[in-house]
Structures are given as C-alpha cells and as structure tokens.
Length: 291
Image 1 (cartoon, rainbow, N blue to C red):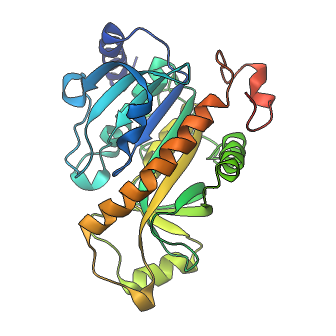
Image 2 (image 1 turned 90 degrees about the vertical axis):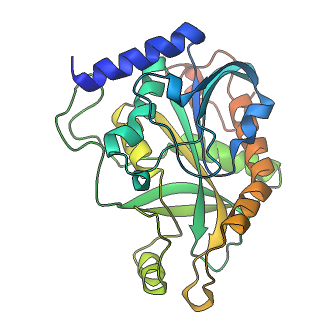
Image 3 (image 1 turned 30 degrees about the vertical axis):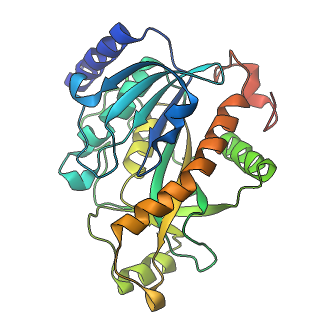
C-alpha cells in the first residue's frame, strides 16, 4: 500500500467515525457558491483542519468545512470550499480531498467554481457547464509513481465530463428557465488574472472561460473512475478590448447572484436520480430528468 493510500484511508476512517453513510454524490463548492448546504439535511459538519492530512483553505469565501448528510433523499458529502495550487499546495495536496471522496464511496462528483468569461455573448451571473478543458497550469496531479488501487497509469480523457450528467443538467436548466452557457474551460495557475494578450491567446486556442481550479480535481476523479459534472458561475469578463481592473467585491457579488440558480439546479440534478441509485445500476440508462 502506498503512503498516499494510507493517508486516504486514515482520512476516510476519521470521517466515517462522524458519519457512517456511504455517499452517492460529492460536491465541491467554489467561490461564493456555498448555499447548497442550506437545502441539505446536514448530519455532520467537519472542519477540514480536523480531518487527518486534509489541506485547509486560505482563499476568500471558502469556508473549509466538510458537510455530510442527505439531499433529496440521497446521501452526499459537500466540500464547502477547496484549496488551490496558487495557495502553495502541491498537486497531490490540492486533489487529496477528491481521493478521500472516492474512498468514501462517491461515484458522481459535481465540481463548481467561479470563472472568467471570454465570450462576448456571456455575462456575469450566467451559469456555465464545462464540457471539456485545456490544462495550462504547468503541472499534473498524476505525475509520479502510480498506485493501481487508485486508478490506471494512463487514464483515458476522451470523456472527462460525463455526457449523461451534462445532458441532465442541460435539460433541467431548460425546465427551470435558467440560462446555461457551455464550452471549454481553460485552467491557469494564478493567482494573478490574465493580461489582454493572454485573454486573446486563451480565446484563440479554444477557451470559453478561464479559472484557477477544477482541472486537477477532474484529473484525479477520472483517474479514480468517478463520473464528473462541472458547473461554474461566470463572475467577471476577460474581454481584451473592454478589460477592467479586477474588483473582488464585484466578483463575489456576481457569484452571489449566480448561487440561487446554481443551488436550484444542483438540487434538481440530485433529485432526478432514483433514491437508491448507484452508477452501476440500471438508472444510469434512464433519461435525463427522470424521477
């Protein structure tokens, strides 16, 4: 057993000592998007600092609490806040919580984050569904010795974001009359925002939005065989010819504007699966939006 696997097992054992359910879903809530827990029957709240080997967030508006409970009758674990590469953590530390969620039994993972829009048709407060990504972070959490118990040496990335879950989200957004953009997310290391030339480059290579998270978590989740859905709030615009200085309070205000729509969509997504569903069950073939 690798040292990483031992640390994962220790963290999982601690969480199970506080909450014994096996979660079907795992959520990672990004900047200003922590309202989902208000819709949950929260049965355990565990600060990250209490969980063995768990990294603690220093980023603004990231609570740093693991919330365990039920949502629409489904057991789930919610990470209220994440850690980022730019905080000085290694890629292994950044993605350790995802390894723990997998160890607890999570099969469907929903990643949320705040992003900068690069398409003139977008506007702050819109929701964005990531369908693919470009990794420009300059690092990868899978570099190094591979523990086959955690995933294959060379994970396939032909479907990094689960098509069935994405189709569900699109159908539910239409039913809820929520504007949902979709496309390619570009991951950068940060913490600085981009220059005009960088925004032009990112748009030129095929990016629709840009951010400083998501991709390392996705890589580790796919490595572990999890189904991933990624939903973002567009909180600012990176349009080179109309670029404005960064305004953090304004970014947080746009995230707050998107949060109720995000929460509504996530609750509907979980509710759309049958109460006892697992990824291996026949429900994986059911149509989007089924109850």
